[in-house]
Amino acid sequence: MIEYRTNWRAASACLNADPDMFFPVAAGTAASKQISLALRICAGCAVRQHCLDFAMRSGEKDGIWGGTTPEERIRARRASHRRLSVRARRAAAESRAS
Image: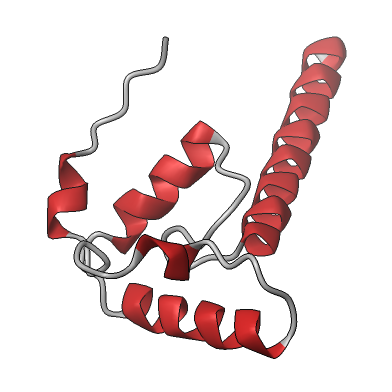
């Protein structure tokens, strides 16, 4: 089981905000306004990085976390996997060359 430290949440800018704002269900303009407001709240948050780290480690697929949309987190995960893959291939090539 993975243990997550969540005491950072007590210092979050969204603590007293409506949680539904961070999980838009509508599409189009309504969702865009909701996302924009959530991202503005995140922009001034002192624990934004903790929030994003939590979302990335726990695989949060929905909602606004750490000032990122689900699509942004997917792109970040893919980029991270590509970097790890490149490093692994380089390490394997170096070990074969030695």
